[in-house]
Image (cartoon, rainbow over all chains, first blue to last red; front, side, top):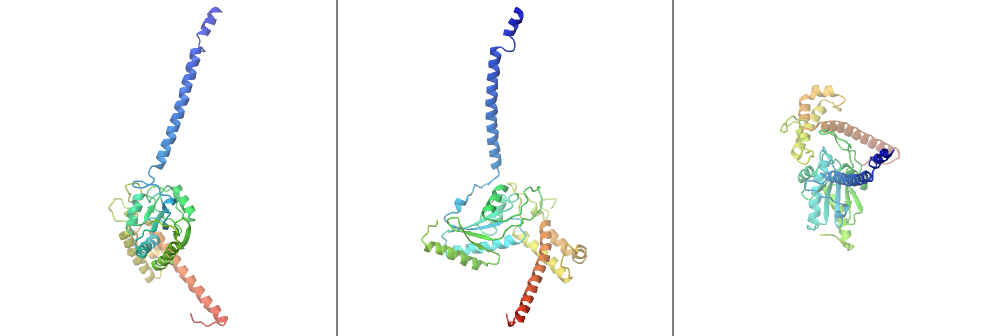
Length: 217
Length: 116
């Protein structure tokens, strides 16, 4: 009996062992927590990688404020309609520039509906062929879906595209004229010529000025 | 789908940008593609073929050379798109014509003159 008691007191359930167990357990919990947080941060960092690279940065609707923006949705692998419309956009940009005497109150924007293929570099090189002033925007599929939703733009881009897959994107083909406060003003469509579109845009810009409302210059 | 990056046949469609994107045909290759399309469609017109997808064999035998040139200058998805668009536009124009005729006829029966 005495022997057994003695062994018990030094057995596996000693105070020392218990303390060691608690300390180790606490240390592991802390470690796992720290590690979990680190992994979560890493995931966020990885998720944001590639968005807006190489020279890109995040552009929000706020940045379009203060000027009349002219927004077109399309994709660079577009067979005929987008290139036609972008040539029209280029003519409109030059017209408006001339008529506002280069005041820089007009901001042309191209938002891609095909983020899988249209990276910042692809967009930049593509838009350069039309007009240097056009700002190209891309993002993740979710970001593109969100901005299309905000502008009520329909698009049919497949979500999961295999590398090298060849596909077309069906999308709404209107220009959206937005006022300096970010409100929708008017649509410019296929039927508009550069001249008729310029007239519409200039009327709005002049109305805004006549009303004495603020414009960035 | 060119095997080599510099092979001309629609390789423009699969070339990669340094940031992982895919470079689209530029203005020059777009124009070359449209030229190929126009030549092929002229041949279809001359042979009374409307739908190059439905009447693939006929289009191939009558306009094989033009088709090969067209396919060589454009991405696959574009070739299909233009062939479908041709049929769609034909049907659209036919419908517009029909509606115009019907309108003119109904105006006449209502006693309006036929002047436009």
